[in-house]
Length: 120
Image (tube, rainbow, N blue to C red; front, side, top):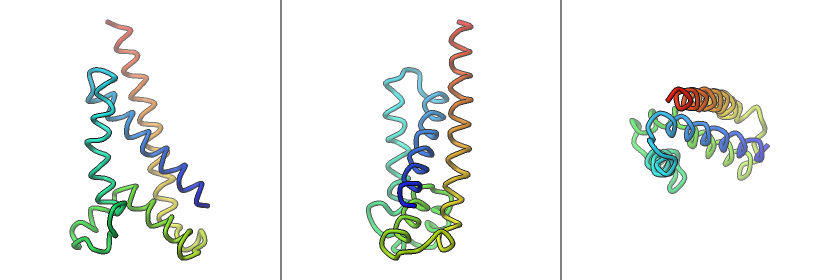
């Protein structure tokens, strides 16, 4: 289960990177800077460096839209607490839906970028 959560998180992060890269970057070298610019705040807000329970309520409400938050919650439940799929189902399904949407969106954005470059 933990491997599935990690793979879904990677897919979501890569999809976000493709979307940001194709929409905002002018060169391929700019993509890494953009992913880091958006990725580090996502990691902090997701509870990767300190527990999300320490955050005020407003930040916790924002974290509900962060895939890193759901990854941390699901992995903590599976690895540390020994939860099954029923206990982490909300976090797991959020990651599934988010990863599918981001990979599909990244693929479409990349195809659009390639199509525009061919026209030039």
